[in-house]
Image 1 (cartoon, rainbow, N blue to C red):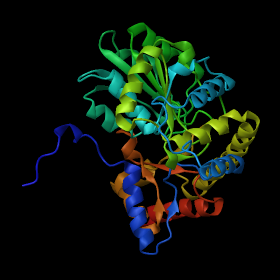
Image 2 (cartoon, helix red, strand yellow):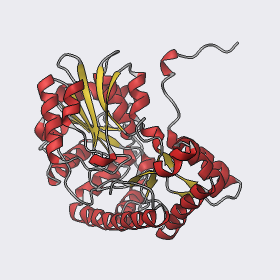
Image 3 (cartoon, rainbow, N blue to C red):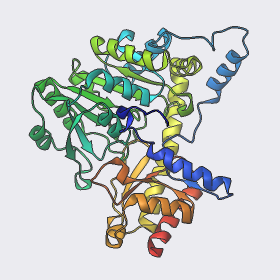
Image 4 (tube, one colour):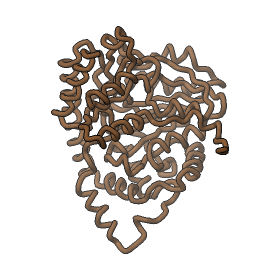
Length: 400
């Protein structure tokens, strides 16, 4: 007999993108060419000058790049990040208000572990980044869901928020901006309104700003300025400077809760990877070069986004979507194609991958409101391959 495993881990499931990757890798081993419209990682590596600094450090005869770091992350990186946040118009932070984590996912886990108790009410929006659903279930949260609509540009409705929150019951509100999967950038007035709600009911507002530097139109909302005692902000360096495989993220907020998040983070990984910390520190410290690299990256991604929309209009004329003002994705609503055929997005995406060699992420993984949508990444492939992939989606819809 095999000994039992913990019932607590039942809510934890394989990441949807990991499942897509597993099928993709199997097909690639069979010699299939797979067009990646699924991946949420950049196609542009960190600038060469920072990679050269890493190369030079790796051949040093010292332990600098191989040692443990402080559990909260090296001081220089936390100081550089605080200065970077201020540079982009954010709040003035002390380095003790920042914890560096082993990726954005670790930041999410440590944050939720620090503020959520069994049966804590948590307000979430649907659709929402799929990483939060299993974690909230794992921690025993009682979800209060506010649905978002494509007709409203996926902007939250504050009246609907007020209908489901209450002082003494609502522990936290979770918001992602710029959003994954929709690319929506939260309107400034709505951001301020959500912060005021959190203040009024004494709830945490957890803000995921993984794509804060990849905004093409509009401005990022700095919740910490609106609600400094209530805001916990999660970020990652996977998107900018573009080191998803090096696993580095961060959390900032009020000192009291940051101290607790730091303890949880330490228990998970002891300390974040030291080489990644130095890379990001050097990247942030050379501000002029960093901003130049970021602007070039945004220009490439903005052009790809505009072409992706053009290809969707051409090959999927009955599809609906909201122009993404940030992030790396377009959430494409294929209801007019799939509803009449009785095929939801998870089934369609797997068949599309197996039959046409196009990897996408089903909207169904992001919530209940978008069962006939696909999330398409516009950054991973060349323009030619992206067009080919979107054309294949249109062809496969006709073949169903």
